[in-house]
Image 1 (tube, rainbow, N blue to C red):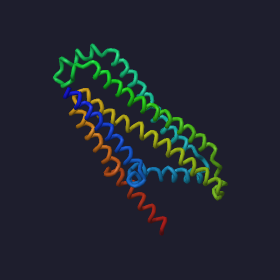
Image 2 (tube, one colour):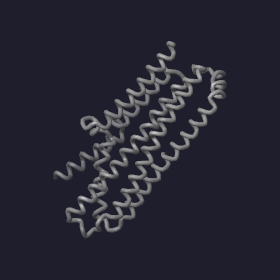
Image 3 (cartoon, one colour):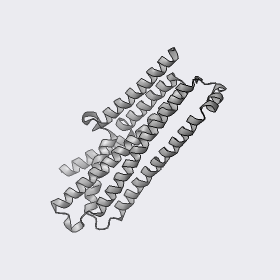
Image 4 (cartoon, one colour):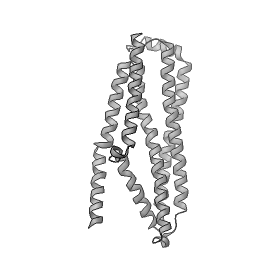
Length: 236
């Protein structure tokens, strides 16, 4: 009974950690300082540069790269979902194998199946995020194709078009980030198959790694310095 209580605490901690990170990263106060938020302005800068280009082959290549990366993660999600369902069908055999390993895995069929179902739900969520992101990138590609040519640079309608196209690309990137976030937290969730304490430890480790990546990484420092330098040039 005590073991089940600890499993419940570990699961609650995992859900709270994911929810807190989601709220932190997507809040206006703190999320606006993250690496993801800093990249949003460069999506709009990309669209502004595209409007000034007569030949836009490079823009279509960038879109193709973004679509391919999103499609890869979406297909990977489906593969993991299939593997999780197969694992669910082989619960008896898997538990027998784990009983012979030096791991603190409880031979509890109901708990094991609940863990596998939870892992499946995470990757189903990730698939929907990646699939929607892929669709949004498709829409953005169409909007790029519909962008007025270079002769319309001075028109307000042209600038409005590229700004809204940038918003669609930003939304696609946001959905992709949410799907990738699910992948990272799924790694922490997998530690639950070892023990509740491993689950809690892995959740803390993943949470710290993701916060550092968004707010203390060298990449963020580079992008932030680039933004400051660009703002200084524009002021001058």
